[in-house]
Image (cartoon, rainbow, N blue to C red):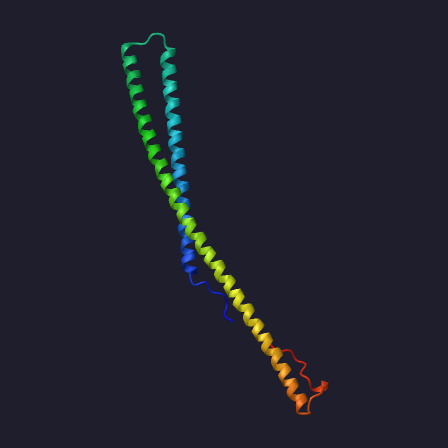
Length: 164
């Protein structure tokens, strides 16, 4: 019997690569979200540090207050921009996870098809082996019966070699 060959092996390998690429996309999105979170935290720290520095000086001039107000406005805008960026990244991550789930489902389907095909191959190989063993046994039995019937046969003339 021929060796086992899954007809969709190349498709299965391709699907594995697709899943790996989708997993990498998810990892990159998680990293981008983490970076956005770090930038938001850094912005908060800078804002709090500037606020504390300003409040620690008892004599603030009007230009200092104007500069602090502008800084607060810039911090608010930067925070809104980073929050919007993070929201977009989270939505992209959700889409990527959905695509990854679908690709994994396809991969599992191909793996199940491969397993079923392998089971069928093993069944056919066993059936072929059993048929060969049956034919071998019957041929020994028929040749022994022929030898005994023609008067040639006895126990000493029986075939002792096993069938292949």
